[in-house]
Structures are given as C-alpha cells and as structure tokens.
Image (spheres, rainbow over the protein chains, first blue to last red):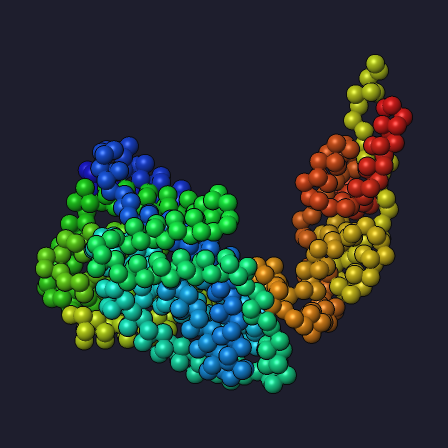
Length: 417
Length: 159
C-alpha cells in the first residue's frame, strides 16, 4: 500500500511543479507532509532523508552569490566581453556566451542570466542588433556552463551529495563534454545567426563608450568578494585532498565573506532563498518515501533488465532518458529520485552518475520551461519589450540540445564507460 | 451631535473636469499635455468615453527609456546619455498611448469617501486619481493637493 501512495504523491508533486500553477515549494512541502502523515516514512526517517549537506552548500553559495552580484564583477565581465567583440558576430557571440558559461560554472544559472541578460540587451541596443538570438545562446551556454561543475547546477549538487563524487571529479568528467558541447552548439548558433549579428562601425564606437569599470562596486568590496570566491574555489579544488566536504568549503567561504564584508550581517543573510531550501528539503523527504516504499528498487530493476547490466547501455538510457525527462519536468526532483535508483544498480560505475548529470543539466535546454534560467531570461526580454515565445525557443533549443547530447554521448561511450 | 456629522464626506466637490487622452494619442502629444496639466498624469479613455487606463509621468519615462534600464542594477557605465536615450525617445514618440498606459489603474468612484481617496493616494503614490461613474465612464480626476487643501481647510474651520 505504501508504494502506490509514495509514488502517487511524488508524481502529483512533479505534475504540480511542471504545471507552474502551484508554487513548487508548497507542492514539495505538501508532498513531504503527506508521506509522513500517511506513515510511509516515520518522522525520524523524514529527518534522515534530508541531505543537509546539499542545503548547506546551497546556503553558502547563496551568500557568496549575493556578494558577487553586489560587486558588479560579472557585469564588468559581460561589458568587456561585448566590447572585445568589436561588433564581429563570432567574437560577439563567443564573448558573451563564454562569459555567461564561465559565470554559470560558479554561480547558479538563474543569477547568471539575471546578471548577463540586461547587459546583453544594452549591448544589443548599442550595436542595433536583435537581442533574442544572443539571449537564447546565452541561456543555452548558461545551462551547459552550469553542467560543468559540482556547484554550477542543482542536479550536480544533489548528485555530489548522493554519490560522494568530488569537485575535481566533476571538473574532469563532466567539464570537458560541457566545454566541447558549448563550443559546438555556439558555433552552430553562429552559423544560423551570423548575418544578423554584424554591427556597423558607428555603433561599435557607441559600445566602446561604455565604461565597464564605472559599473563596479566600491573597490574594497570587489577585492573582498574576489578573495572569498577565490578562496572558496581553491577550497573546492582541494577538498578531497584535505578531507573536507564541499558544503563545509562553501559555508566556510560564506562565513569568511560575512566577516570581511562591511555589509550588516542581516543583509547577505536575507539573500538566502528559503523557498528553494524548503523545496529541496520537501523533495528529499518525498524521495525518502519512495525509497522506504521500495518504488525505487523496482525502477532500478527495470533499468537493469532493460540494459542487461551493460555500463554503456545504462549510460545511454540514463543520459537520454534524463535529458527528455528534464525537458518536461523539473530536473531537481527528477535527479533527487534518480540518484537512489543509480545507487541500487548492481555494479554501476561512476559513468551512470555522469550520465545522470549530463542528461539532467543538458535537458534544461530542450524547452523554454525546462529550466528556471530560461523562464527568467524570457521575462527579462519581455520587460524590455522583446518576445521569446515557447516555439521560438523550441526551434533553437531542440536541435541544440540534441547536438550537445550527441557530443556528450560520444564522451560517455569513449571516455567514461 | 447631528446625524450629518457622521455622514461620510464625499469626493464630488474635489473632482476636476479634465480633457482625457485617448488610446490612439501618441506618446509625444501625451507628454506635452501631461506636462501642461501639472497633474503628473492624465486618464485615458476609449471611444465610448470609458476609462481605459492612466498615463502617468513614470509610465511616460518608461516609454521613452530602454525597457532594460531598470533591470541593469547599475547604470554608471553609460557615458553617452544622449545617443542612447535620444534614439529611444525618437522611437517612442509616435507610439500610441495604449502601448504604455497602465491598463487597470487605481480608480475612485463618485460616491467614494475622502478617507478612501486618502488611503488610495498613500498606497499608489499617485498625484492624481481618475474618478469614474457607475458605468465606467470618466467623470474627472481628484488631485492629491486638492484633497490635502480641503482636509486642512476643514481642520482650520474646526470641522
């Protein structure tokens, strides 16, 4: 009886989140309350099901992201990238999307898009170019850049918590396919939009008139956040060697920033996104319900028998299945539920985790609603008087996701399996 | 104390007649008329004289500035105001008012009390609010300055 209950509640929450008619945090918390009240998990099991490390990592990064936003460092980077282009389509596209992908590898994708898209609108305005192709290319780059690191996208943070794989493991195993996919996809977008992205010399002079450095915050605040971000990144690179977990590094980095920053401590702490944290906590309890009821054992068995236990078969099914699923439903609950499934596969190697990471992150480029960053970018365009419709995104999103998945499949089969 | 002392004060005495904008007026002509009116904005009516919206100074500024401006977080890096803003002003000048008006503005009714008007002014920050009749046709506007003057005058009278 527990299994249909747990599965039913999970699917209802998934559908509610996908429909966007109910706030995702409310849906996840209601589902979590359901599995506890209906006795699918005990109260103790519910508390144990929450991955507190993931929540700690998110909190630490939210504080650091607040500092980064306030410093104007990433705004500076985006303006300089635009000016570096000198109005050449290839330099413009690779400059802006490269800055986006780099920022996204460190910051969360939504923050990256909120920082980069308005600057891109200003740059496109100065150059008299259509902003929509640039913004769509940036959204795609943001989702691929986020896929490259442990901290770049929530599915990777969840996978790290479930698998114990470290920061360098992510850099080495999902970094290269993300970088190659980014280059291939951006080159393809350039081929499609090259002619429409050429600016006149007068307009290039207007872009040059922007004073990127004037948009930076107070010098001492810029130095403080760069020191703290640098120390945190160094800590991530060294965490396995020094025996510290990524959440410890993120929270230590955030604490260092709180101590060094002149801002009253309440201000950066107010930037912590409590709805996101409760959304994750609710999902972990829901997935705990699925685990306790045995539903995930059956999914693992089905996956095992469908692939005959072959590592290549598993990687292919997990990667492509996750990409398609993430194009339809939120990739965070999907990843939270798939992690324990992978854990249950007998003799699974790390390739199964990398396949899940790639599928869940890249799938965010399929549709306009597949990732929060896409929706946020469409909103920023709309407020500036430009329309990015579902179909317009789909026309670029589907082929680019397929292209990036082909690249990643090659990587999985040639390197990981 | 007579019963009338407790009767709500009505706004009717404060309503000013106004020549409204129409949805088809251009932003350029609207800007000139709003500037001349000194009220910080004007109501917009449809062909039947029904209130269709309100165009305030902030809406006007939004029309003649790039839509991404409020999203930038910082604008210190712009060094050539006139090139960019001049282009947007030219682009916006011939647009119809309907594109930039607030289509569901805060509205007063003829029978509303002064207390309700004061509350609405405080909540919206508007300098003037359109007043409509029961069928939605525009009656006029009430200006916040007139409401304050009336309340202060009555205070002076010991009312």
